[in-house]
Image 1: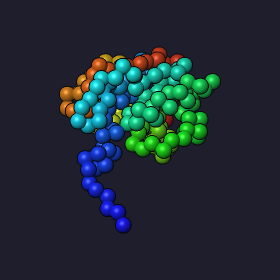
Image 2: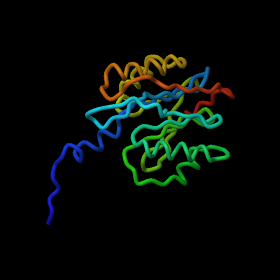
Image 3: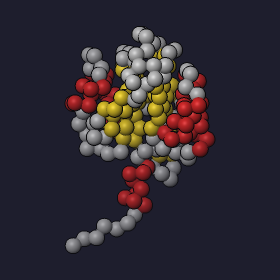
Length: 186
């Protein structure tokens, strides 16, 4: 009967997969998604030229956690004739753990969890926002205080960078204009 040895790698692997900060914001002025550029194994980091956010038509997609899941999600959204968060969740397959995908589609903000659940973020008719990753809590607090436009996303990411060791710029922010009147979902 074997015993599992405690090592730094297996004890903290699940925690280290969450390193990043990903922010989604919808306002009357537009839809915005931003992320940092860090990639780390916990002891060291590199700044990645590969963005964690991409646009597919009018759909904005970002990821935190597993780079493999993020790259596979981008490929899948890129192949869809009409990108859809629900189509993605119904057909995406992975064995990877510890990841989250954010999607802004039809001016609605969604979180997709590793169990492929799709949760729409509540809006009040004027705005909706969320933030995930190790810097998510700090960024969420920043968005609570300031949720006006693209500068709010940059400020939230900067706040996360200032207070979380596993969040680092440069930040990549993408945006789309609002196509319709904002439809509250409350």
